[in-house]
Length: 179
View 1 (cartoon, helix red, strand yellow):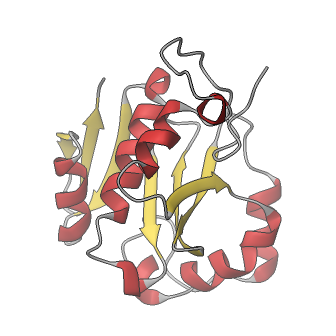
View 2 (cartoon, one colour):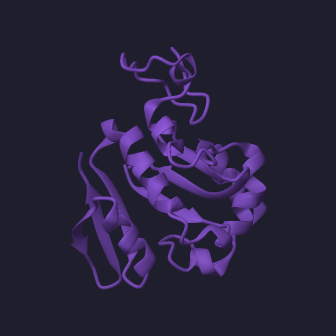
């Protein structure tokens, strides 16, 4: 089995790939970097936990999380990381050699994404990263996203990436992406 040196997932053979370098990087990762080779994803690792904890403890980020209303403790954060299901996918988003955000697909096929580095907001990084995830994990389709009704940036993000409103409650909108 060959794994992508960027995202760490198994490479699906694509006979049209001729460049030896591309054979070590999956086509969705090649596509992600096509217009900007400074954007890529990598598997979330223990060394990333400190910055992820800082981001997730920022009320500007967690205010729209369904299951978090306060900053996390280091203990809670490490316990979550160590107890993740094997069918969950968590990726660090890198831009210009910096870690700038996280994108994940849970075992329930629900995607989450946030950019902890506010300096990259508006650069199209979330859009390109979400499109990458939908292409790379298309075998997990349909993919869902729950978005707080007041999180207009996320609503626009998911709609622009082909997610369609599937259900809604007083506070939450559920979007569905089908390949």
